[in-house]
Image (cartoon, rainbow, N blue to C red; front, side, top):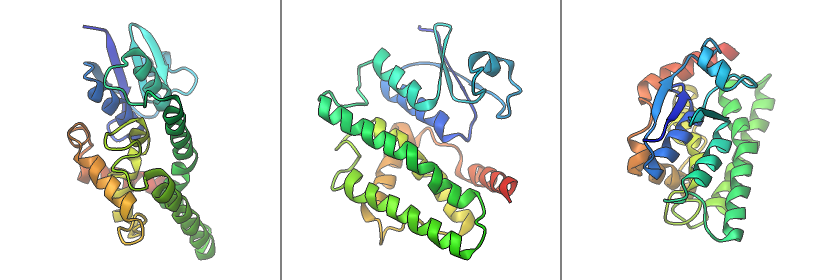
Length: 220
């Protein structure tokens, strides 16, 4: 068996991207839980630049940053592909990955970081809804998943929008992905969570909500 390790923290959606990718590929690995705040010597050695999870260690070589890791997994184990074979479709998938990387953090910040006033909050909510509208109309469209009928790398990149975002919605009382306003994006979140590999590898919801509440209080 190949020597593959994943350094992670149980609540991180970025760590779960890596777990999902390896599971979808059928790749066996050793999972090592590390502390979030850089107290792990193995983490410092494996990711000395950012000192954060996730880290994939393959044959003694370390790869950091979740989307970099996913691309490495795809290149190293091309079976059960997570990206399309067609060059145009592959480029399109990478576009939506980039779009998500550029926009999802601002959506979660809406829940995690308090606004200065109600006017600022209203502007932030409107901006988040505009971003979700683009995902709804241009990203998902009429498809089950971002790439069609099968789950792929784009879906893994957007996985934070289900489960984690649902927890933040519960905590704050703000329903952002409302099925009446974003029916296709909402349907995608449900389809995504029903994929067996995803469903079986999500953090405990109640425990996650408590953790997110604690994290949110750090910004108050």
